Image (cartoon, rainbow, N blue to C red; front, side, top):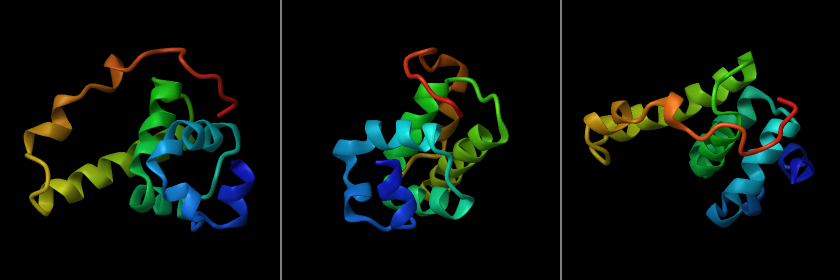
Length: 106
């Protein structure tokens, strides 16, 4: 999966499939990608980024923070265009996410 992400620069149709979000999220952690690819994942499969966050739970690197920022940016856009209530993005707490559910090198 990491190969598909890197080789396609985040444009592979497989990467847009929410069914594979968990696998893609883990691959993003095991094989860190460029900010450009993370940005594409925000647009194509935000759930994969959320799954990556679920795996690391508490950020321990700049890469983890970059993933969190992509998800936050997406939430802000959704609030701005009215597809999500303003209170929804703030309702979740990063500290509430399950810890240690995935293994990563990231």
